[in-house]
Image (cartoon, rainbow, N blue to C red):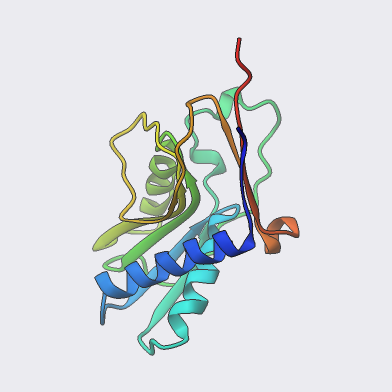
Length: 177
């Protein structure tokens, strides 16, 4: 049976992320780096919640990993390069890498490769809105908003207001053979 989550579910997941980050990193200067596209919007929403009652310094950047993907040659179309924007010093920073969904771990690996081109952070943690399981690499998020139990071939479709015009998450089950 297909699963659909709405704007309230997404807001609750982002609030959970913000709370976990607040509790685990009290007092530290944080540098959020959102992975395009949608990870940057999740990062912005987390920052907005943290800024409501947290006056510490927080940085924000956006990372485009299109050219770092290990499936680049298998894409059906040319990737749309949108560019990265990291306006702070990465060397020595406490970076929280943010994405919308973690699946195999390959996107995170690509993001770590891309981030290393900007410098050597003191620490990198991973925050994801949705963890759907099925890793192919030894990568686990430090902060998770929503856990969704999926089958490997299912599709998790995330729509966010700023990127897609609406907030929703839909799990589309893989067809049975």
